[in-house]
Image: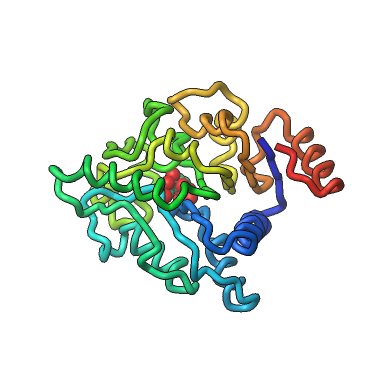
Length: 264
Ligand code: F6R
């Protein structure tokens, strides 16, 4: 794994955006896997700036989001579809029909089919070239809560108490946070060709260390990223604070920069 420890949130966002830009420039019809939450907002802001000021063209890009609250319609202001439109899609020249978010308004009887079709659509588009990930306070990637199978696929999941409490900041109260979601599985995520894993802030430091340096376990689903050959973790100083091998990662990142290679 390549671990980049950078000064602050803004630098993390810019580094992530540079990786996205490189891919979109090299492969204009690439497939991006996207996350919601606070972490990628700076990345999305930077992607919008690159589109506006540098003419970065998203017209042939396809996107798949990781997850959606179950029970919220796409028009709901707290839905992840709404979030993506507001924070990214409305600001770039992507075709809305090429943006996919699991449908949280699907009827109970149709959930399995809908999840299976989501996976089939990813395959039809050739798979995810670059997946953007954040990490939850309980170590989740997407909504793969502790205890998830590391081979899991897109499915209906229950949200952990900690996630409901963490995400209540976006709702009037924690009672309003949906208790279920549709989420790509860990197995789905691991099929992406490349992954960027973003974390910032002191609150994430311990769980980031558990994910990157602890055992691979379904109790911290982000730890499954250790099994993927092309992951770049981009952390700010605060989020890197509990890492045991921080100085080695800095050394390896400098060495990589000198020979202009990504050293995973
Ligand atoms: C969101 C998602 C989640 C978040 C995680 C971190 O689509 O899949 O795994 O990445 O909960 O959220 P923030 O960035 O708000 O701390």
